[in-house]
Length: 276
Image (tube, rainbow, N blue to C red; front, top):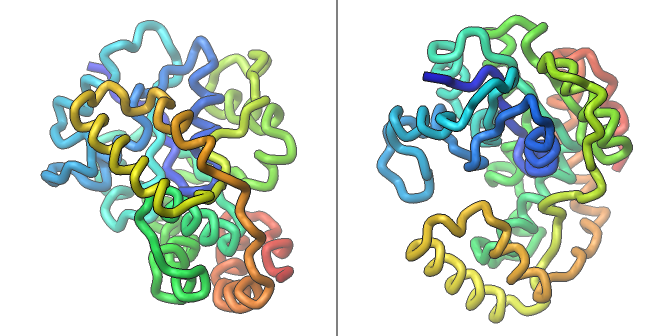
């Protein structure tokens, strides 16, 4: 039985999909076919939103491992989960953890835009991005990261900033390869930025298409993670408008203390996130 020896644990909307794709290119890295297994966050829960609901099903995700040195999966739910850190520590004591962090204001807006695209959100941005909303609270990184730093050696936790990934994805991925103990000189193709933010041109047409895609996924589960849904939606999407400055200033103030504490925890200067 083979289980992961590394996990990409989040944060959501911080480049985890791109990193998942880049890692999967390496011949000495095995990534589970399902991104966001969410197993350690929702272990045993019977809910159709969570694709892996038994330990046996989770283990089967890694049946295809041959001689790969790095075996992993990516589930951004793990960072925000109150229980995942403890479950991971118990099941995978030697695991390496990869964390991506993004300016929490940008991350909140990107998460909101994603919900619009998936027809899960109908509120305006001012109403949706209020303290207490899931979009905003997920950007309070310090308490989420602390759960992992309390249970795992710092040498086993790799923190990557989204800004660095965007600025030089090849260099960041090569550095990550080295962290995972595989050949860092592998020529990774980082020309595609996956799951970039976009909004529907028509909310009505988008809701119709989401219903069609959801129905097909239920009938043919193998369509999940094939990229077909993304290609179907692409003509209906457009780049989003910038976040209104007034909302950015308000949220930056809300995150200020947590940004400072997070920077101290990970040993990085995050002051760029404090500029509205």
